[in-house]
Image (cartoon, rainbow, N blue to C red; front, side, top):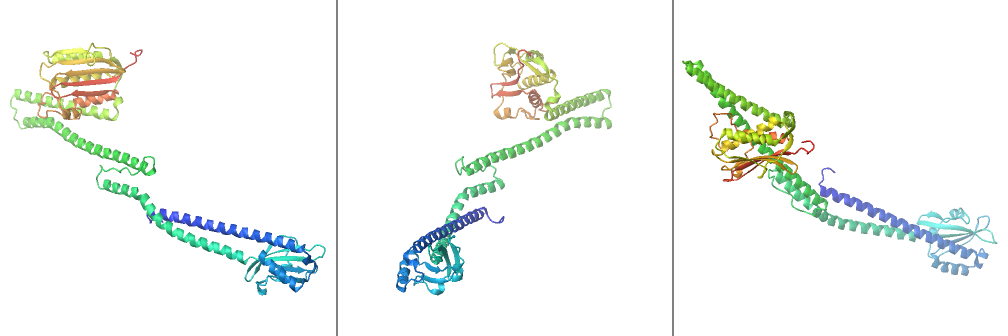
Length: 480
């Protein structure tokens, strides 16, 4: 059964149920018909017996030949019964039957004698069928009157009904088999389309979707919706995995490059010293300064990578939160900007403009200073000297806001979309000899912001500068 297709199994199950129903219906109809005919004959036998045992003809146990013939012909109207008159000793005094019934087809007298007087109607089997018989006492005369009737015609009627039911059932079964085959094929056509879609997806076409085959309230409609939802999730999962693998390859390549550069510098300097190419003290001092610079750069890069790994694994475990006000960080950022570039106009405002306001939150001040320092350094590094910078701080709704906006050249949408990627630098040819500018600053800023249950947003366009906005859950007024 498991090797058969679904349509064949459905058809066989349907036909089996139909066959069982037709068979049960045929049996029930035949049984009810047989019971009805039997009850009808029993009623007729009792009626005829009552009529005969109370009639004057029954007073003479040996009716004349003419009377017997008239009685037999009259009894044709009652289904050709068979009458037997028995004396008190059980001897047959007379018997009457229809002339159209041969004598050899009559039930045996021994069986008729055993019929219980005034009892229920009983069946008497014969070679040509069964008979129904009832025994009635004759009032005032003694003896019994046994009335019997042949059940052969009723049996033949029941047999014809059974045969007709079988023939009609077989014809109906053939017709319904053909109709059922087409109906099952039509009903399973949506499943075949789903099968073809699944095969195309298995072949690599993840963009395929199951077409709308039925109303959403039907089983096929709900299955299509569920499959399309699942396929969308699978496509996104594969795309995310591919993107993750690409990022991992880029990450490994960038890490290798960033680590290799200072290591090669250190190794080259030591090779020069080993080969005796540094004869003077000044050469040795300069080489040691380069080694120290590259080692410091390597240490900073390693610490940044370790911090990112720790934030990825357990963001909250790297924080020591306490209540603070972002105005302190904003004011310090203003002083840092003026110290880095005194020519820059720096303005302290509220979020988007207006006067600054309180921005209470619960956070790790040292880590948040690291975020703000990265954003300040980004503004200084990517805008010309003297470019105006605005620092906004305050609250909007239940969020504490700190933003740093510059009036620099801005970024394209592509650059803005990758600004927070690790090891991504808009200008890869920029000289990084002065520090460990490996493109991790904004990535660290985003991870630290998310560790504080906050968000960092970048709003920029070419020629309109860039605005980085930090939003954090605001402390309630009573707590602040």
